[in-house]
Amino acid sequence: MTGPRLDRSRQLYEEALSLFPGGVNSPVRAAVKPQPFYVERGEGPYLYTVDGERLVDLVLGYGPLILGHRHPRVLEALREALDRGWLYGAPAEAEVELAKAILRHVKPGGMVRFVNSGTEATMTAIRLARGYTGRSLILKFEGNYHGSHDAVLVAAGSAAGHYGVPTSAGVPGEVARLTLVAPYNDLAAVEDAFRRHGSDIAAVIVEPVAANMGVVRPARGFLEGLRRITREHGALLILDEVVTGFRLGLGGAQERFGVDADLVTLGKIIGGGMPIGAVAGRREIMEHLTPSGKVFNAGTFNAHPLAMAAGLATIRELEESDALSAAERAAERLEAALRDALRDAGLEGVVVREASMLQYYTLPDEPRSLADVKRSDARLYQGFHVEALGRGVFVAPSHMEALFTSAAHQGEPLERAEEALYEALREAVKRSASKSGG
Ligand SMILES: Cc1ncc(COP(=O)(O)O)c(C=O)c1O
Image 1: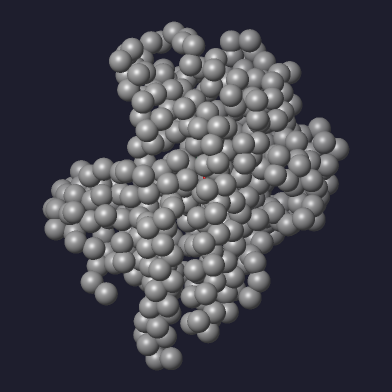
Image 2 (image 1 turned 90 degrees about the horizontal axis):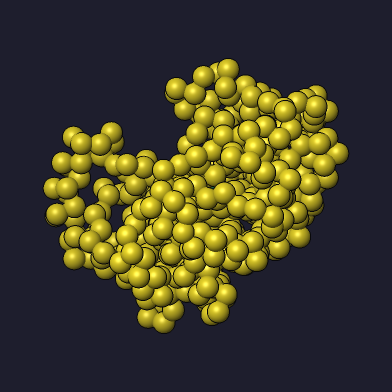
């Protein structure tokens, strides 16, 4: 299989390597093989590259584009907003409307603070939890990603509830030690951490479905267990719904799994593809944020008019159409294609899907933790990514990411994606077997 054409992309990437560290502005983009392609435009389920390739996009900006690229309703809302200027430094009606739209669906309701990224949302939620409880420690899970700020760039600590060590250079050990780490889905480890540090833990932050180690689902009782333990110890439960919010359903993971958080962090879909983040939570907690309270948050671009417009149009479309189920139906079809490929290749494996996000693993059972995911064949996945690209389908370059579908994935592009994923995985298995002499 010949790869995608890359002539112009090669020139751009060469320049980029001298302009940006690693040639890109977010690391996962450099992992695309054989090298990053450059995008000219997006339309519906497709990305068009500067080299004239049309790719069915199963990355979708890493989650936000639940309606696909350049959805007419979102485009119209953005055009209308642009016509009225794009930054005011003062409130505007759209932020009131978007907050109401979010709170119609996202328990625990109450109040919202808009920020500009998922990173800012989790940073703000954690500061708020610390300010509200007067405690310093937080607990996160191995393999959960909450953005690129210091408190959450901590993983490691394989033993239950150990103090974390930084994942990144530049995060001081003193800061990382304020973050406890437990294996995902391991309630015993959480209990243990609370037994030892309970009165110092401000919050547990968790991805209700982990979308940063592929797709790892919560075991039965895990989220409920976190709710119970945090409540018993007076700590807050922060559900990081930056990916799952408005993808697992309008009410997100809280509704899907019947669990009530104290604070919910949102991003991605609620901005319709514009930069956004939000913290939503109970009024009595949220009122601790400035200016009503003493926990500082501010931002030149908070509640940016374009993000408000695109987010509102997106949520209204999700409310009024069957877009979420359409995206889910597309994911079901891709799930079947990957399952068939694993079976026909004679490879032991599982495909995990939750709503419109999915990933496969070469494991006998559905993974429940980072340790499980690490046993899946990462090199095979890279081969799969390359083969898929060669067949006109863009899947994330790492098995630590999810494949996403949108409402625009229907008909011909969906069939093309099904076929391409099936063949790509079969071919990747064949190549990896011949490389290993099998
Ligand atoms: C669960 C989760 N939380 C937070 C973030 C950070 O969001 P952002 O990249 O907008 O800062 C991400 C990003 O992928 C995420 O997946």
